[in-house]
Length: 423
Image 1 (tube, rainbow, N blue to C red):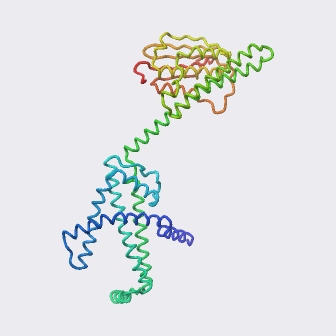
Image 2 (cartoon, one colour; image 1 turned 60 degrees about the vertical axis):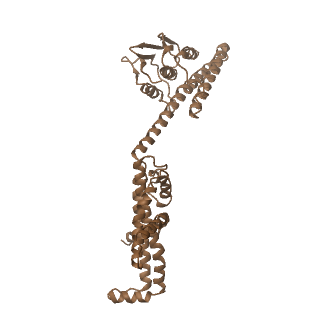
Image 3 (cartoon, rainbow, N blue to C red; image 1 turned 180 degrees about the horizontal axis):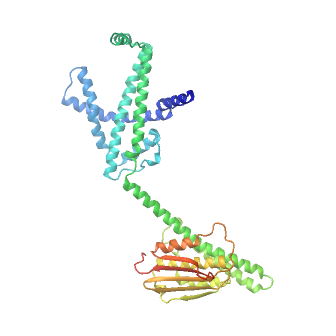
């Protein structure tokens, strides 16, 4: 029980005079300083309209000037840059629970400006209250504690009117300081709670951020697919060609030399495609970033490259593939490339059948190969079929992959719409 009470006491003291409370005090005093020009202008205007007579009326008009100055502050807070400045101050000093919820840019829309204006008014009002209490209450508390000035008269007045509540000057001074600290803690906590709602991004801004993030993720996924399909295919071909060359290096040097030349060509092509992908990653000028990637026109080179690894492809290519839209042709090439790479990885130098045709306004790709005994998968693999599905979905197409009913043949089928494809 004592431990729980001590913990609550420490939390209460930290909330009242701890580091967060001190930062919020600075934030509120800053609001009071920002209020001063508006308050002084309001005092001058009200004094010109209604000349005050006597100290009481002067004090009353100065108090009313606090409320007439707030509309002027609200008007200036409609400037777009006010939200960015107030958001930075709130993140640094107000200690909101999650500073990332506060907007960092100017308020572009009128709803955002109106919310910023409301926050600005609250900041200045609470800041004026806390700053006024600090400037006036602290000297008063010191005077009470040390018995300066007319404190004896105040003590006598208190005793005469509240005879059952005897209180000394130092105790009353501490009570005034505690009141200032509690007011600062309460106002600071309220501003911290309201900061995300008033200084946070609007729903339109959140949607724009989500769209930008989705665009970035789509770009990253596209680059990952390009790297996986191009460089992954090249490395698979190079590995098989190097293994074959090593096995026949002494018995068939001519074949080994041919395999080494194929490795050289494959490596050069992979470096060229890697340079293209890196150019996209660096957001270079499209005019200098190199070609956008191979298309179906380069299928013959791909099939010749696979033939050197021992994969015989029985290809049936429909006429008119060269006239396909560039996006469809590029994605179709990558799909064929990844499908043949999977044959190379999992079935080895086995015969494969490839059919690329046009029917009903769509491009149809079918790749088959006999199921072998299976090879151990490389660590981190298994992304090829997912990448094929993503490419097909991006063009509003579809794909299926899996063994046939008899379980002896693996079949990959992809269809892509040709008409109305976005370029």
